[in-house]
Image 1: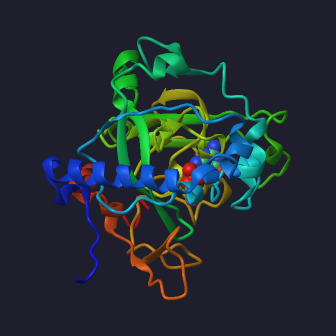
Image 2: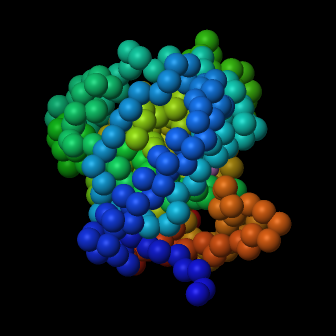
Length: 318
Ligand SMILES: Nc1nc2c(c(=O)[nH]1)N[C@H]1C(S)=C(S)[C@@H](COP(=O)(O)O)O[C@H]1N2
Ligand SMILES: [Mo]
């Protein structure tokens, strides 16, 4: 049987749950079989003591694709605040202090306020959503994230009519983040979405993965996950969310405007100036015989998000 790429929209929720439960059971069995192999690995290095559980109810928005092994999810990261090599964040992020933690929400809102991390965990019932994440560099993973729709936060601060965009600002503390001494990007790391993208039900305010609180290298204690955009739109370790009228200047856009546009929707038809975006390498299944996967428009989430861009020339607004 030819392999196919499952998409969230191919599936009825009733088909998803049993398979997912099955996979989770298999995961547990595997980790049990591996004994303590999980515990003292790379993750433990960055995380300190054993990770705290953070289960979420399974979401019908999950993909049915095979999830990327946990060890790969926590050892192959982009988090330039902790270095630019893929294994730097797992080695260096242990210095990040994730509690206490607050996220300040401000700008064009009627109710500006701070949210404590514990409040973010109770904004709505936590959901586990298995989403693809595709990096602009051409690799991808499938990760069971745990979080709540970002719209749950947005609703509570009551954006004004001037709130056209949302800017996400990451922690920038030299004492905790050795990567800030490099000028590879302008710090703090800034990302942004149009308000309708931010309010889209797929946009997840994320506090965990694989049923645990986020490992530090994955953007603890809170990050955004926007599954139809290249990974860099999913800002990590967020401390400020600003509602603004003008399109924010994001860190990657500032660093290389011809290479990284504001929209950054996964789009196999728009090449990065230095490489094609037509295919991707799924982390964890690399191997000699592994063929590359075709990258899907909007990372496979077109059914849900294409309407956001109706009438827009996505080659111009890349
Ligand atoms: N603060 C911050 N957020 C960030 C980045 C970063 O360097 N700093 N890298 C981005 C990029 S390029 C990608 S691909 C994803 C990677 O997420 P992961 O390491 O959890 O897979 O995080 C994004 N969020
Ligand atoms: Mo990325």
